[in-house]
Image 1 (cartoon, one colour):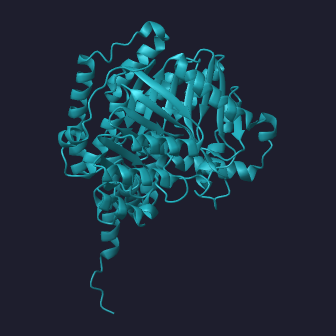
Image 2 (cartoon, rainbow, N blue to C red; image 1 turned 120 degrees about the vertical axis):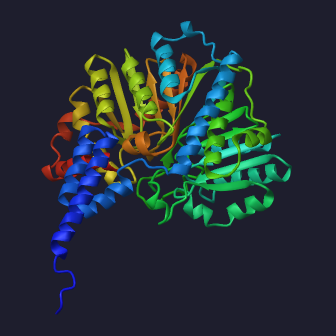
Image 3 (tube, rainbow, N blue to C red; image 1 turned 30 degrees about the vertical axis):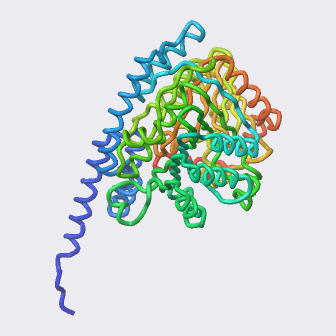
Length: 488
C-alpha cells in the first residue's frame, strides 16, 4: 500500500501539541480560579483534542460578539435609569432604620452590578402555588397598559393555564404583552399550541438564548435565562423561585414529590427595575430598541409606596462578573446572630463555603435548609460532599422531607434578606442569568423568617455522627462529582 502521508504521525503530534499550547494559553489568559484553571490544563495535557473541544464548549462564559455588544449598550441604558432614580430621590434611603451593613451592601451592589437600593415598596410573600398563579392572573386581568413576563420554564396544564388565559384576555383588550421564556427550559411548551394562540391574540412571544450546532461555535449553549419575573403596568411585579407550572403536574416522574416554591409580589418603586431587567432581556433576543419598548409599555419610575427598601441585582455572564456572589458573601458575613438559608442545589464555590463556615465559627446560629432529595443525580451527590465541612463548624443542616424545596432565600439577623431565583451553586452564580432582591427591613425579614420556620418544621435535622458513618463508596461518589462541579 502506498503511504501518501508517511510523516503523518509526527505531523499529528505537532498539531495536537499546537492545540494544547493554544488552549493552555487561552485558559491562563482567562484567569479562572486556580483549581479550575489547573483542572483544565491537566485535561488538555492528557487529552489535547478532546480536552480542547470540551473547553471550547463549556470552559468559558462566551455569549457571542453580538450579544456582548448589546449587553454593553444595555449597561449604559441602565446607568441612565439609575441616574433618573437618583434624581427623583428614590435612592434617598433612611439608613438609620437598618444595620450599618445594609448601607455597605447597597454600595457593593452599586459598584459590582450597577444596582442602587430604592425606597418605598409594598410586599406580599406567597408560598401556596395555586394562590400565586391565581393572584398573577388577577393582576394581569387588571392590567391597563402592559404585561411583561419572563420565565425559565412554562408548562401547559393545571393552574398554570390561569395565567395563559389571563394573557389572552389582556392582549385582546389591547394591553401590550411581552413573554420571554428560556428556549431549553420551556422547549416542550414552545413546541405546543399555546405560544401560537398567544401570538394570534397579539402577545409577543420569544424564546431566550436559542441553541443550535452553529451557535455552539460562537457562544456557550448552556447559558440559560433562569429569571422569573412578571411586571404589570410597571407598578406591580412578581419574582421568586417558581416557574410557570402547576407542581401537581410538574416532573411527577422524578420521585421527589411536588416542588415547593415562594414568590413575592411588589407594588411600588422596585417594580420598574424588575421591568427594566425583563425589557433588557427582550432587547438581547430581538432587534427592538429599549427606548421603543419602554415607550410602548409605558414603563416609568413610580412613587415610593410601602416600607421596603429593595435592591434589584441582576446577574449573568458579561452582565456582571461576580456581583451576585459578592452580595451573597457580604450578606452572610454581615450576620451577627442568626442566619437561615434555603436552596434546592447546594454546590458552593470556595468563598461561599468559607463564609458559611466562618459565620458558624464566630457564633452565628446558621441553619441551612435543603431538600432531602433533588431531581439531579449530579447535584444530589455533589451537594452532600459539603455537609461534613459545614457540620464540623456547627452549621445546622435541615433536610426538607415534604417535596423538592425550591425556594432560594437568606435571612440575616431578622433585618436583611435575599430572595430570588439563584441557587447556591456554580451554575446560578456563574452561568445562568438570575435576579435577586436584597430587601432591607424587619418587615420582610419577619415574613421570610416565618416561612423558613415552616420549612424547618417539615424537615429533619442531619445528625453529624450518623452522617459520618455513610459508606466509603458513597463518599467516593460524592467527592468525585464535587471535583467536576467547577468545570460545569
